[in-house]
Structures are given as C-alpha cells and as structure tokens.
Length: 375
Image 1: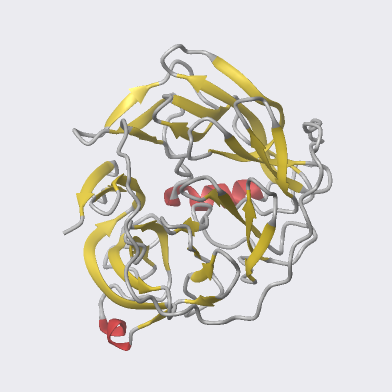
Image 2 (image 1 turned 90 degrees about the vertical axis):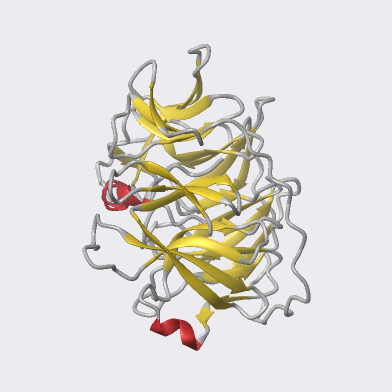
C-alpha cells in the first residue's frame, strides 16, 4: 500500500517521463461514466486550532513489507523484516516494480520497462500484472502498454492505476470483483489512497497537456464526488516520490512541491475548508537541519508529528548523498511547524514498521534499508 517510487530514482524517473517516442498506445478498458462536476475551491481560511489531540488510530503490524529501487536488479527485492532486512529472489525478472501487498504476498508489476511514452503528455508507460509469490501465478490486469503507475489500495486486493489514453490520463480502480471504474481524469502521476481507502488524493498540474485547474483534489471512492482542496501547482517538478501524504485520521493532507526558494509543503483540509504553505516557529531557523522544504514524509498516528528528509544539505551531502533526517511537530490548526529535532542522516525514508515507533530508511553507510527507532 506504500508507493515504492523511491527518492533515489527521482532524476531517472523524471527523465523517463519526458521520453517522446510518439508510440501509439493500446486501447484502454471501456470507460465508465465520468465523475461528478467538481466544486470550486473555497477561499483560504485557517482551520480552527485543535483543542485536544485526536485518539490515535489503531495500527495493525503485519508480515514483512517489500521495497525495490529502480536502481536495483529487477530479479530481487528487499524484504523489510524487523529481524533484519534481506534480499529476496524473484521467480523471474520484472520489467518494473509498482507495489507489494504483504498480507497476500503479491506484487504489482510490469512485464517490460517503461521506455516509451503515451497520452497527451507522453508519459512513460508499460503494462500491469500481478504476481503471487507463493504460487508463482501471474495475472494480467492491463496488458496494453498504457499504464503510467499503479498502487494497491489499503485492503491489498483492489488496485489503483493511472491509464494513458489519446486525450487524457485516467485514475481507475480495479476491484477483486473485476469492476474497473473511472475515478477522475486529467491527472498528473501523483496520487495516493487514504489510510482506510475511503478517499484518493490526486493532483492536476501544468505541463502534462491536459485540461482542468491545477491543484490537489480528493475523490470519495464510494460516491465519486471530487473536492478541490488546494490550488497548489507542482508543475511537474520535484521527485516522483512526492505523493500526497495523509494524516491517519484522514482530516488533512500534505503535498511537497518545489515553487522556488523558501517553498514548503502545502497542508490542506480533506474537506476543502482551507489550505496553506507550512510556516515555521522562528527559533527553528537556527537549526543546522533547517530548510522550509521537507519530503518523503511519514505521518505519526498522533496526526501531529512527522518523520521526513530536510532539503538542507549536510556536509558531504548533495545529489545522491545523504540528507538530514528530522522529526517535526506540526500544528494543523495554524499551518505551523512548531518544533523539530535531528534524528541523523539518511539517503531516503521508506515506510513505517510500527507507525510512530520504528521506520525504515536507507543507510548512508551501507546503502541498504535499516530500521530506525524514534527516540
């Protein structure tokens, strides 16, 4: 359920997305009726200050998860086992790794590497299959070269994927019953389901040759209703790992975007009642790790603290090098980072092991996944 698009591969993936091969795409599945009309964005208003910390959402810790980098071999993947991360051989070489469902031990993958483009923005595309590792059974989901990206829904059985057509990019939901439903059109390749799967956040951005106002949107999976929650425009900039990040209680989202010096993540209310770029308590500006921008964000179950990488460059850092690993406290009511601490340095933040307690990151010493405990 976690996007397996890693920060280390950002440069390569962004270049790939710009490939202009003008190869005609195969036919997409029969489209469903379009989503309802979208309401206009409400005026920016500050959300009311929180009077108490919401109760933490119970988190179930399941079997070891999986991580794969675009920079690693396609015939083996990292298993994130708390007893120690290890490499696991795959039964055959994958063209591209999309995502993994631990409870089902099943991979979303492409049979070929996305080396050509499709759709109005000529985004890199491939096909979409599942691989049950226990049985070795593969199942085609979309066997035409039209899929930009795919993720498991939180239930580990339904699939979200971005489909390229001649005129647009469609966010579609494929269920275990075989239903294939259109959730939204005119997307950028930036989307993420909420923790319960009730909602999916996505962006529309300039630069992808599709219509629609740029911004961050939320679609209600059950009703199809779409809400524009922020008018932020990523403009195709930043890392492919900069997906919308949900709070555990699904009341707000954060989106990393690069809008020039001093830019910071945008925080939006899920219901569209307000959004703003995060600001910082003045005393934090003197910290060695300080930079307004942070990315690869993990939200803790208290819905206030996050673990992330700072855009500030430590000695010996820079492109391909380590970044400061920080833990920040955010007050969603005032759109302010009110506290922060340095946890160390890391090449990338991957995902939670036990949310709020332990998480996986890439070690700057070994380059492999390491388990970090929050002090």
